[in-house]
Length: 308
Image (cartoon, rainbow, N blue to C red; front, side, top):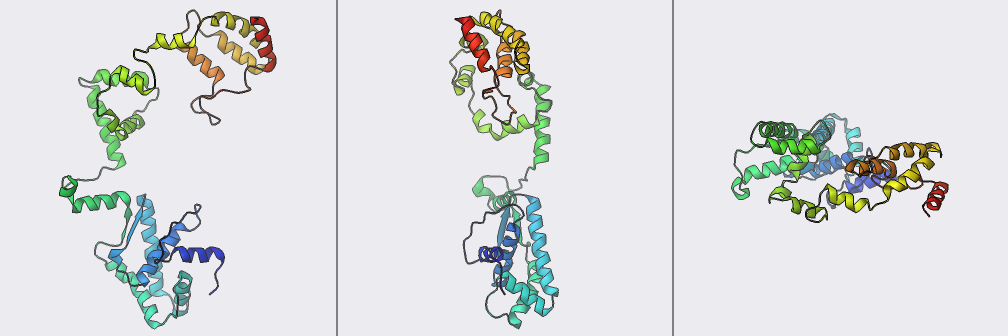
């Protein structure tokens, strides 16, 4: 049987005698190669219970098992000529005699009757099975159960409700003050994933140090480091020029003209970010400068001349 280059590459990748790293685009046949590899192991005499296939998701594990059973079930019913062709396409080398055909037809029954079934499972379920076999060594309770995503989300929500109705309500209020969304589930999941980072108590100065800020830094310190004086005069000269310029400059002038400057406030910084920087959701570069968008070369020259 002659195969094209792609099929020949799949046959080589499915060879159980080789250690293979397979990388390919979606829909290119990776799952088929895995199924072919398992089928060739079975054809070679490997006991089904000694084969382990791990996937990331339950859906992928279920699909792989269903497709493997469909393949083996088809072999049990195929006429002899078509079964020979299927085995050759799989990569079975040498003469395909009656014994080989009979072995292929029995694989479906062997897989079905395997104690515990074929081990095609997720990484999580494999690890859980391992822990159940050696709970003392792993220092876990022998009757532990796995926590799925839905149960974990519900548990986090219940804990938040308990905190909000108990002595820790101030902590919940502090989180609510800093959170702009209407659903805390993602934030709570992030907190749980990074729980090790909260193992040691962290005071305000310690938290500031994580961001490279000096001890005692507050809003006044931030404003003093951003506004050095003379901004009101600069804006007074700049805004009229923007309003009399192009459409984009005029929009920027309206925004800048409404910013508080006597004295500057945090809202002033946020307003400048909106005019001069891309937002956090921008595809072209979150919180990067809007290069070329503002101000125009002509406007820069006018501003420089005015300040001089």
